[in-house]
Image 1 (cartoon, rainbow, N blue to C red):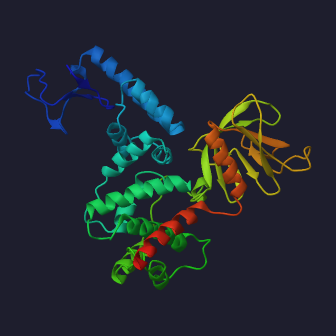
Image 2: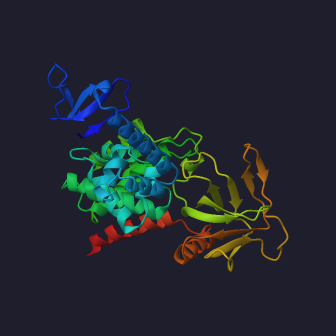
Image 3: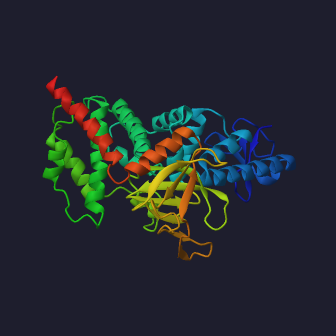
Length: 386
């Protein structure tokens, strides 16, 4: 008899259509599940379901700490099918899941993760919603990651889905993509207290001229979008004002790396974020505060040989014994100065090592997020000339 026990004190559930003689006929059904008192469920099924629910809770906890390991655990324990649709449903429901971790998983560039992303976006219904309304729904279902290439993939998938649900609103998905970014940046500019020069509706309209395959979008449409954001900012999941990562809207790069300790020469896995000429590292992607901060000013980077593969290190050129100015958080919460004369780091692959080294070298001089957006704008504006 197939049985599913809910986490409730006095009730369990039977699949709809399964009859259990109780003297009162068939029990009421909710969402296709027939509810019965838990004492009517055989003890062995209660034990099985208790173990299963405990495994699901463990899987969610693992997912929140490391999304890939959490998904792997759930699949290995037959709690989740290894299909993009099943995993997308799991992330979309989001029960007990950290939305930063959901965004981290959806943003990965592995082919399977991209399939999950598209299946996840397909679960959103945007028909007859204006672009701001659709973005509110989409951006509440996960925490947008910081890395430019991840944002690009996720917003591309969003634009495709929005245009699929609302044919004819925009000339192309490129138009939807660019305007979506413009709205996100408008939200930041209007509601971030650190931004003193607030954009007017006229400036917002001017910024978005020529993005509709070389033509202009209707002014009434842009005014309505502007007023919607001005009157109500986006709600950002799990942003309690103390989450340092909410300032990392556009880091140059982020990902898991191994870092060699300073005093104790052991390797530890850390989540690194590169932004604003600083390298931050966290124990988990969901941590509110970084374990350490490495300002990159006056540092150089080089590839090095080590027992660990794909290593590089940060160092002070021409002064190998000088301690790098950095800070870290001790286990008791105290913030102390670092004691590294160099930071040695190992990447998972040769490709990722090269990408990290290039990103760090270029951190001061370029911003990949705005390069990406500028390239898309250039593409659509060129259509007007052809």
